Length: 270
Length: 255
Image (cartoon, rainbow over all chains, first blue to last red; front, side):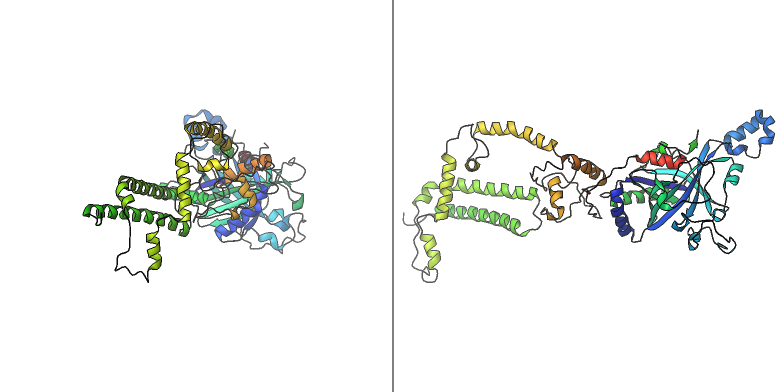
């Protein structure tokens, strides 16, 4: 899958107006989203996973070639877990068996019916994004992406087994709009109070009002994106970027949507 | 000279034709100014003005060429003229003196034509000077002064929008542009610049309204008009640039 996107920085004083404008443009009410995002960094080349036992054979030409093929780079990858406002500042559930049974992962607000937050029941999604393609002819940020649903609960063990270390986590707060085939996400980053000294994802979430803004002025990031299933199809890729340009024209007098700096979205781990 | 020759009649007829053309083109200019909303584009106004000017020249040529004939002609009503029912028209036709208003115009035109050029020391803001033609020296002075002044004026402005700062402060809804399409207020990039400028220049307020129509505007109206007020009472620019936010979101690295 390919994700094509345009970005804009939205100063905080413009946020409210822009929400209204987007609601008018898309003819829908904003969908408020809160997401935990865990950043993982690869520490081992993915192709070597499960092969450490054969390290004596590393000099063999075949294996080297195979490694080269499998491991272009090591990447940062994100694990995204939708949470709800009531999850913040709540305590662990008393009885874990009575809730969440049969909840589907696709329902991000599954836990909102309960005032408590259960880390063991937190749904997660692994989201991989490649560094944006260099030198694309169209002025949109285009990158290879992929996502997969992970088991609920603690993902760190599984991620470790796949060769990823937990780096940090933050919360993304924002509003989602859908305009034809374009998803518009107006969001900002929240940090947990008291710094990032934890080496594991939090099991409890602090109260939402205690969360601190990453960007101190409270500005938002506007991302408009289209996910193209078949990135090799030039025709659909072109259509998608044209749709994004159309949106940029429509929003021109409100915000300036632009291609993001490629290196700022560099997910390669060095 | 009791009867007119064919040729003389032809001359009169020609004069009439030219006058008719002149009144027609004047009438059409007046009509387009009065009736068309928004105003016609300046190119059309200019071409109308040049048509009128050509008409005037041809009338003036005609009148001066045939001056001998025309000044010797005397109009009198024929016996078959319906003098009772058309008394007004008859009076108009038999007038020997000009209408007082017209007399004023003529006097002003004569004065303008014969007035010796005033000295180059006279300034341009003199209200009387507006009606007098500029002397060569004044024209030169004007041409020397204008580019510098226009440049200075232009430098004081942040170009790129459709409205001036003063107009924004007064509310752009009140600006009469005379245009049918909506002028878009601004686009995002310029809006940010405007906001920055507001802080620095907001107090000056030198109250010189600029002609909106003549200034800078982009062709093609946007499909959606957002009435963004770029002059937010408390503009807060982000501290962290977008790419650093994105970098942080990607790798968790603190800027």
